Image 1 (cartoon, rainbow, N blue to C red):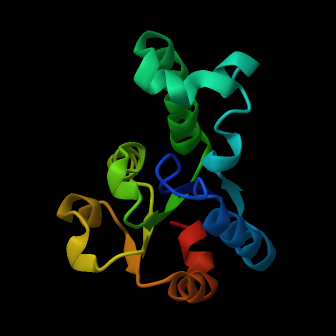
Image 2 (image 1 turned 90 degrees about the horizontal axis):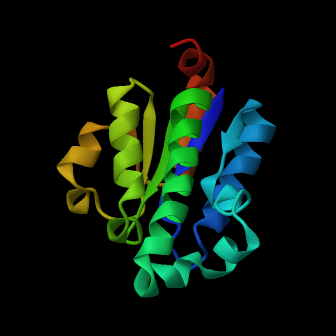
Amino acid sequence: MRIYLAGAIEAAPDDGTVWRRELTSFLKKQLDWDVFDPSLHEQDFLSDEEKNNFRQWKSTDTQRFRPVIKKIIDRDLHQLLNNCDGIICLWDEHVIHGGGTHGELTLAYEHKLPVFLVLGMPLEKVSSWIIGCTTEVFQNFEDLKQYLQKNHASIINE
């Protein structure tokens, strides 16, 4: 089983790395699942110039920014749709300021991939569309972990 870890990167104060790192450890050690963590691979295929400048190009040179972000989008969506079996997503106040996670969950729904949503905000503040894309919704990561430990065999066989 390979899980795509969706959630805020650009708007998250830590680039979304802390929760992904902790969850990756759990998934590998407890369930022997692999992950794709886009926060770790966001820039590993960009040129040095792109790595150093693409964030500022967003506001100063959209003609240079657009091809770089398209490379990132293409790689992430390729991973999601061709190499992953499901998504675990942290939905918090930071994800609201982006667009990628919204699209990833919609594509997962369209392609019938399971989506496990962990709330980082009250459920009533989450878009109805996003809730509609989910397989399960959890109040926190501990609830998710308990669910996965109990049900991981049936998730793999779906």
